[in-house]
Length: 240
Length: 189
Image (cartoon, rainbow over all chains, first blue to last red):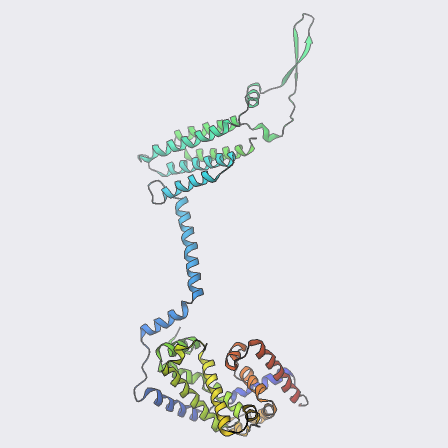
């Protein structure tokens, strides 16, 4: 006999059971003992609810629910904070979070990027406000402050070479002696492309884009301002 | 979940008995577990009438404990099923002691049990006669564990709770019991 057949045979022994008469008789005796003449009452609604909670509110279930609640609330708070408009409950939290971000940014480049991001935020906020909203002017001032801060940071990166290059913007000239009249002869020498292409972007280029951004905001063209700010962000990465 | 399904859930039944001494839940428990308990006792003692009496006694004793609040006050009892099996086990031990007062429990348990009464209301008596005869030849410990696992379909965890053993111990005993039964049935076609 194989193990499988053996287990099947054992399983068939489940047919060993009490006869219906004996079972019914036993149930009757039990009922008489436990009810003591009174009818067996059904459990009340509150008791059933209590049992349901006893089963479901296990420590691990409670811990999971708390964790889910915290994660969900954190997510919604973050979402509300980042998308808050001026005058809304979460707006001050959003500004506070911006300050905190600026506080923990250590490199000058990171701070410049943050200024750009905040300027973009202000531009979007202005676009979401109605024309006669008094907060518009405050936001415009804030926006200009951010742009000013970016320019100030970039000023440290604008070198005299940048200025020479932008002014000359052509070939270099070399002294080639004098002609028969004794006048000085210069010959043009093509400018050597010793630096890679990214180095051709200077702080002045970024400053130009920022000026365009300012103009767009003055013209109430906020979408254009936002795209120009994105452009400025890309340029800042390329400025050495 | 319907009311009857809710009631037949083991954990619900246990809580209803533990917290509210719910008589309705107890009757449902009787309907659910009476055959299992009967089989457990029957394959232990091998006498149908005595097994019927001990099955009734098991449920009455269980209700007595419920009323005394023993279920409520102790965390030792993990489920109603294991609680009932433990009572049944203790009652069979008492039964052995009464029937063989001067022998040890082990000796009393090893007394050859008479399963002849099993055929009373079994259609497949002839078919199962062989396996029943081989179960008789097994030692009591092996027979009990095979009944719990393969006839009453209990899990290893439940068996460990009932027999007060570790799960590892139950697995080992189960393996040995099955090997012993295989050896006994090896020459059977």
